[in-house]
Image (cartoon, rainbow, N blue to C red; front, top):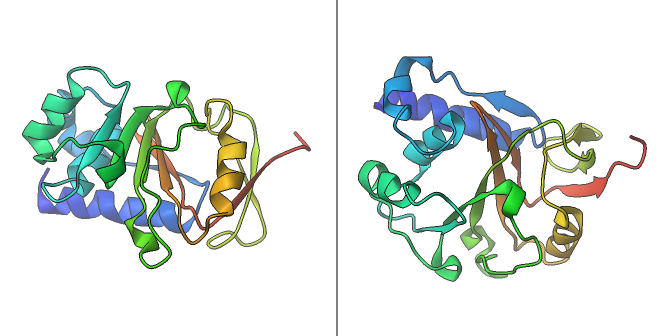
Length: 190
């Protein structure tokens, strides 16, 4: 990707982080040739190409064998242990929300918490979630298809605030972000 494409992806990602639970699409048509070889969805590949570099270690969870070589070749990102990773990449349908492997930052440096990028089957066909907090006027409903245990994980994480991990959820050419500063509850009305 060239600098202009990186800037467009980064701007879209910033918009998604500042509007938690809202779905944003990446215009990947102009650089689909670069993404066509990626063993990831177009959104996930574009995010990796834009965010990752040699100074951003990543940990991989249940990803295809071809993902690590692709990341090394295109992003020059070091693969690391979960505890040392600035980013983690996994498959949402297999993610175990009971595992506590990722760095959540510290009281002194909460910004050191990892960012978890998950590939999902859907950003809209899961159990409805009610979101409140920064970037949301009153509340917002989102329904990404996440593995069981997510709401309990999020409640535990909220108890550790300002420490925590941010989530970037990808499907096709779209993403949805859940920064750790927001509150999430199961939407009982739907």
